[in-house]
Amino acid sequence: MRAFYQIVELSKKHEIILASVSDNVVEDEDLEALKPFCKKILVHHLSKARLIGNLSKAFFNGKPFQVEYFFSEEFKDRIDNVIEEKKPDAIFCQLVRMAEYVKEVKHIPKTLDYQDAFSKGLERLAKKTSLLKKIPVRMEWKRMLKYEKQIFDSFEHSIIISEQDRKLIPHPKHDEIEIIPNGVDLNFYVPIQREKKYDLIFAGNMNYPPNVESALYIALRVMPLLIREKPDIKFVIAGATPSKEILALESENIHVTGWVDDIREPFSKSRIHLAPMFISIGLQNKILQAMAMKIPCIVSTLANNAIHAPTDDCLLIADKPEEYVDKILLLLNNREISERLSENAYKFVHENFTWSMMTNLLEKIIFKK
Image (cartoon, rainbow, N blue to C red; front, side, top):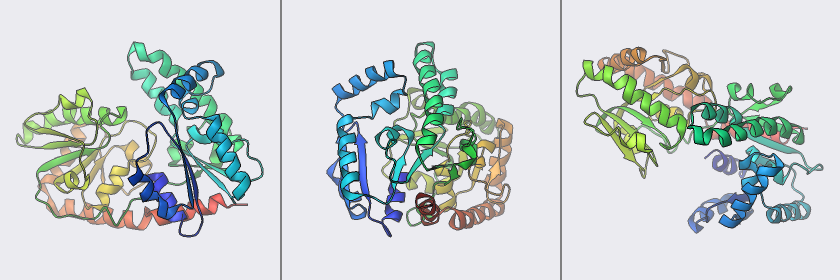
């Protein structure tokens, strides 16, 4: 999403050559969606045999597995040839996974989008994962920590999604990394009038560990307390690929949607959006989307750290089950407060998180002398 909207906005002033690596076959309809915004598109498909070879190579060379996983000497040669032929004014690299392709280019200014502090997410996963997975995850964490530091010096400019992520990049000059948050598509995420079917919603990829943890927290720590006060309360978990743990939550009070064609539908049928995130990396796009749809939000302190929305004015903060219960009941029982939060949040997003605004900042960094 971040890459797509950056491409869309940058294409209004610049010609873009997109070079992309994929471990899946890219569908023609996806390429067609990008063609209006790109002068040229290079796509390299990595075969399963090549992926196995890359992972084996990473085991011995010390690079993060995810960096080696997506690397191809053949595709690097193609990229080098395009750079030599077209002589672009700037190179923009999304994610450290792709840095190997352009890190040695010296004659063209390069910008790296870290996006998140990947190493921090891996560190947290290493502490929570099963004993069988702990060794490889810990190995990847250590390698990524080292790589995030090393790759900084190969780029003239770098950006990241939030201040809390910037602090986690282990380079002595990490304060030089510019902060460019995500935006929200305000033509797509708009208030939609639907009959309210659910009181609460949590949305996201429901196989992603931080999302699973948050949904379980609501279902197992918050919902039992809420049901005592409001036995008919309804909670929907909306998002693709729900894990077995999430599927097992289905009950009279909890509904798990799985994949939905349009995430706006469960949003618009819900009264309150919850985001009890426990990991201090990234920016929760679903919060911005809910705000744009005028759905009041109750989020954790960590979730709001990347957004900096005024608390009690644009959203409510909760960090304990009892706090969530109190604030959920407050919004369900007080329409005036709920509508005030929704209106203020709607204005806040429109004033601070448009994609054009974020990409204007990005453009200045990419072409900074």
